[in-house]
Length: 100
Image 1 (tube, one colour):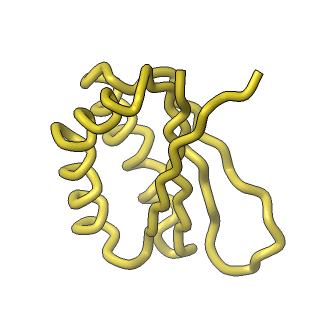
Image 2 (cartoon, rainbow, N blue to C red; image 1 turned 45 degrees about the vertical axis):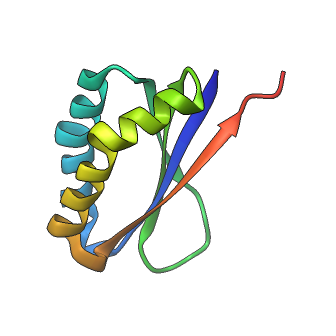
Image 3 (cartoon, rainbow, N blue to C red; image 1 turned 45 degrees about the horizontal axis):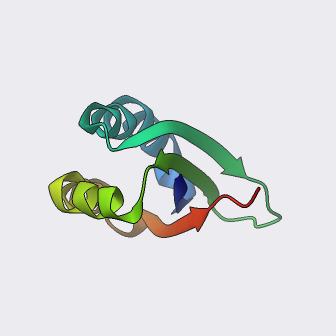
């Protein structure tokens, strides 16, 4: 099992709309696809004065499943986010392996 994380940095003026979009549109749509499971949304605590950062984590079976999801849905959702929020939201993906 792998963890697919996207860290989002959100400008203050887009914060409320971003949270609505991520919770009501993005997460339900990704869950509907079925490749990514068990979403966890965390606010990143930092001492920065500008903007907020969030980590959205998903469990994914393997890198092949993640690649298929990206081709089938992920790239389109990223384009949608850019269209809606322009440069007010930036996401940085990371694929991680759980170490027991």
